[in-house]
Amino acid sequence: MRIYGDSISGNCLKVKWAADHLGLAYDWIETDVLKAETRTAAFLALNPAGQVPAVILADGRPLAQSNAILLHLADGSDLIPADAYDRARMLEWMFWEQYSHEPSVAVARFQVHYLGKPVAELEPKIVERGHGALQRLEDGLADGGFLVGDRVSLADIALVAYTRVAHEGGFDLARYPAVKAWVKRVEGALKIA
Image (cartoon, rainbow, N blue to C red; front, side, top):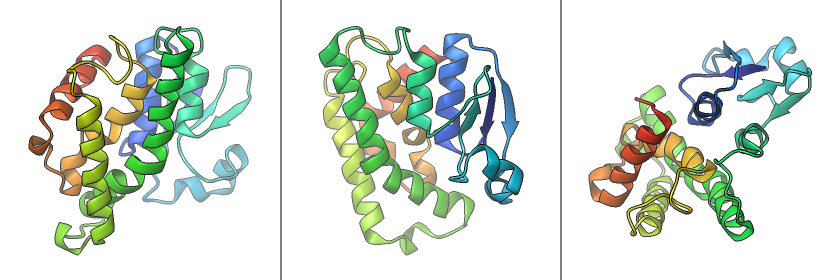
């Protein structure tokens, strides 16, 4: 398997972390989005959407979109709850991550940390939505565990990727103690630094 990813991207790292956790063999192909390496003809032939992560499975089939890749890689593993309701709750968090969390927390991080934009110049709605997303996580983690059940799942992997670096977008996780503790739990479970 080949994983095309940019190491600055939480969406790419969550695929890497899941593959590592599952003990899957892969070649990581660093693909720099800041250098437009996802816009080359060769890359667009692999993923016409021009986005990372993109995976070429061992049988040669391509797959894109981080959460779709996660679901494929983890099929049959303990990263996906066996109970149908818990599985649906995991998917609920994963869909929410791409729709409500990533568009604010990750966008703020990219603009501040990689484009050098001052936090004060971020679009106020991005900041407001980012804090709203972090508060939603805080509320969802009130019991002090993981997002679904008593062990790490794909929901945790999907959401920890950008949450753990939210400070790079101007979001202080000290305001969200349950989230901060959860980040440490997930990092420990996945053995990521």
